[in-house]
Image (cartoon, rainbow, N blue to C red; front, side, top):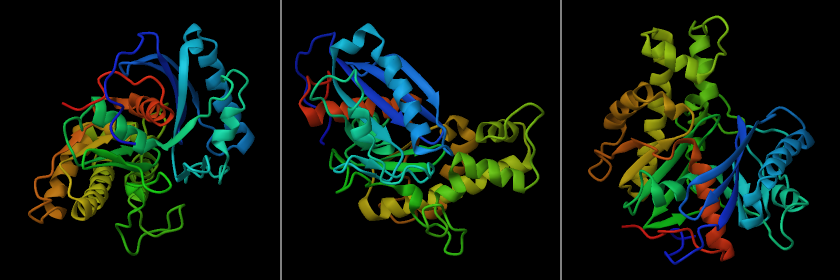
Amino acid sequence: MTDPLPSRKVCDLTVYAALDIGGTKIAGALVNHAGTVTVRAQRPTPARGSADELMTAVTSVVDELAAHPLWDEMTCLGIASAGPVDTAAGTVSPVNIPAWRHFPLVDEVAAHPRLPVGLRPVLIGDAVAMAAAEHWLGAARGFDNALCMVVSTGVGGGLILDGRLHTGRTGNAGHIGHITVDLNGSLCPCGAPGCAEGFASGTAIAAQAQAAGWSAPAGVAPTAAAVAESARAGNLQALGAYERAAQALAAAIAATAALVELDVVVVGGGVAQAGDTLFAPLRRHMAHYAVLDFTRGLPVVPALLALDAGLIGAATFASSQLGAPALATGTRP
């Protein structure tokens, strides 16, 4: 895929459907031609459940979208999923969803009785979808070379190179969470040692804070968001967990920048909602790791589309791949 398709006149009622499947939530949306989410549905991800339980949650989201009158105007359906994915085969093997290994997600969604006859969903990695959306409407707009990251239950990334979305052969290009940042680190669920995801995901941040002696307040789940709240209040264990996460991210980003030369790095996902609790140490560590002339001073900025980026990107990608009526204002300024 290149940028979203060139601008041309489309009907205001043109609708694109999208799913965004992650380790914490399964979201769905109907998106209009301007890239605005108009209808939303969401379910928790039964990440430790069976393959059937996971698919039941996906089907429930599609059911809710299909019950809306705008569903009848839908022209394509994009699926953004945590990876690895295989876009050609239509299968997913998310590291943080053990029951899905080479799971035929596209075929399963295509079998939904409310999908129009002949419409086949289009699969893309969730962070690649985020990159597509942020390049069109968000913080990467106007940049020819960008790394867009999702830092959430896992850590993923997507690349814009020479003004084009770079998906790679299987759709996994930019999977920055599985760059090794500690040669002696613990084994990641992917099987490699010392992956950035093992330090910087929301799960890793909460686990590190707890291992250092932090406890969530009574009645509050021990999540990365709770750790961030404690960090803002000055808790040293919480601050340390975010410091460790930021250092791992900086090392991985600097390595990526050295390989492909970047103009900007955009960071989104649930962990990025911590704001300066994450971004301040991340930028500080970037100054230590990104020291070559062509990597020094690389801007690292928050995503503008927040948690909608995966949905908007999936819709954008599907419309471009299937020749659906183009999303409006598809070219960059």
